[in-house]
Amino acid sequence: MAKQRRIILTITVLYTLFILFFMFFAFGRGESNDHSLGYTFIFMPDNFITLPSLAELLHPSLMSMVGFGNTIAFIPFGILIPWLYRVSFVRFITLFFIAILVLETIQALTFLGSFDINDALQNTIGAALGFGAYKLGFRSRSLGRNLVTTAISGLVLLIALWGLGAALEKITTKVEGPFVAIHEWTDSSGNSSAGDKPDSIQIIGQKVPLRYNLYGAEGGDSRTFTYKSEGQTIFSFYYGSPEPTDYSGSISMTLDGREILTGSGEDQRSNPEVFPSLFWIPLEPGNELKITIKGELKIWDVGYKRMQYFWN
Image (cartoon, rainbow, N blue to C red):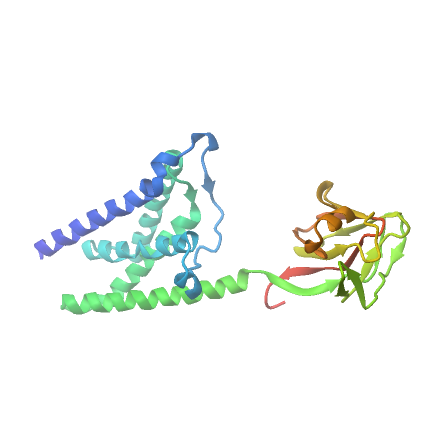
């Protein structure tokens, strides 16, 4: 029994050193630290239960595997520590979480990483899975049977966590709602326009169908339209100069007073392959767009998609 305990203790120490190496020295941390960027502390949790999908595992990327590794790499601690010491789950998980917070803080203060509460929570969840697997697995006098049962229990708990993470992500992630066309728009002069709606227009020799609306300025004049977002939305429209055209039109757009788009008929003449052009931009609540159209240039199929939860 004493020999077995020494073996487990040795494995625990070696595995701890292995994890500490990855936390502080792997991935070129010591070579690439940049003191000029300052300390990095992330205190807001963000989808810390999410594990990579099957598609991400088949075609893994570094970022998709980091969260996975942050969880499964700490499962052994939940098995080894209660195997060595009699400890309740609450005491174990509390002390483990505090230890991870200390290590995350050291990472940040030594510029060998950042303090990320998501990493700490993922590490702790992994240890909790290991603890649960140990409690479910070590129920007989046979060491071999205990280890096999623990491994199976850990796999089952990991799959359950995987499903829970996927469900939470679906519940808490916003998706694009249906497209809402702007059928009536008032310009800066107070003139309201319902938008023309021909079936199609001709641009660069191709017939372009119109689905919702078409706005523009006539006779070289200028019109400015304003859109203010009332929620998280994706605003979009197409633009170009319909034929026949002398390419004299232009478009400009500002977001909260900052210019984000300029275009002209000359762009269409020089780069016909990119017209008609689609423009879209994600907006936060209260963002204000101002779109100024001059000359023959037109915008059409103007509208937005509201970001919403799937149950909406």
